[in-house]
Length: 263
Image 1: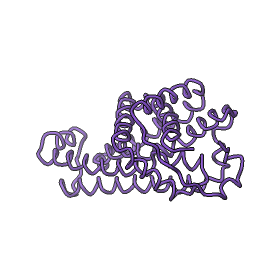
Image 2: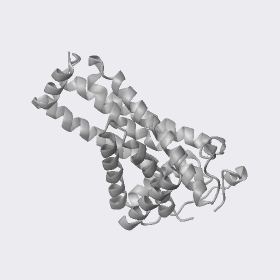
Image 3: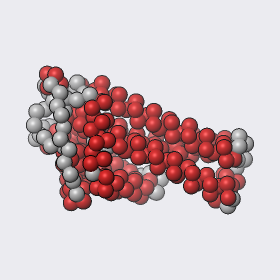
């Protein structure tokens, strides 16, 4: 495979990716390879994703003011929407290891790649989805409960869990949140690895990522559930579990990308 990061001229020739059908066995193999990458290259991975729990806790703290309580859950759940952007360094590590290249000091080499512009565009797309989700969540809360904010955390919990309006908020909020998660997943599941690996722009990568989801709906749905489930489990102990979960998922996503597109 051509190392496009060391050959800027590789970006002069567009490619038309062919999508493969993948199975649960491919997901299992991608996860196994992701775990292998993590155990072989743990130092930078831990350094990178430890930022995620810290930022998550900061967001939680910032939202703990009573006037922002309704946005605590949307902030924490929506923060996962931009996870693929945070994992770009992990994709690069897996890519370099696959090529037999040095990984100890090169994980940030994607900052010098011709793909950087596409990575920035993809990041902006995910951030836009994240912000749209926060606006939608606030709008849903305002429609159901009005503009008056809860005066305390217990009151907010009581309001949400012990009233018909609260359950309406939960059901509608989770439904709308699922749509945003599906959109973010579809546009990013293989787009970031693709722009690192191939001479394509952000638009082509997004379209290809969506095509991958449409071509493998069941398998990609299972992958999405695995991602969501492991992120939830990793988030429970004050997000500390994400220090392991995120790098494994990041490396595994690279290997899933390699399986789903013909090279």
